[in-house]
Length: 115
Image (cartoon, rainbow, N blue to C red; front, side, top):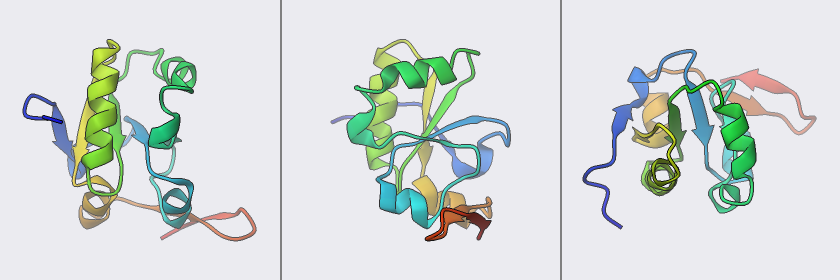
């Protein structure tokens, strides 16, 4: 797949109130994610597209993130093809963490805590 024309932003440039779509798997999400992000594993994006469009109904740009940026690039490309304003987060959650952005993790009891 070719992503040369795909819009992308660095993790540090995602607005604090921006719409973040995390397309990683459940175990990756539980290990650490951005607070307030919408979690839709990549394999479920098409089937759960209605949830995404409902969440994006206010017209905000969808910032798509995965671990390093490959899966999110594919999802961002799909969302753009569906008419949404989407952008890939370069470097994924590794870039997010490197930029000093906060992460929240799940404990075995379902409680969240800031990393």
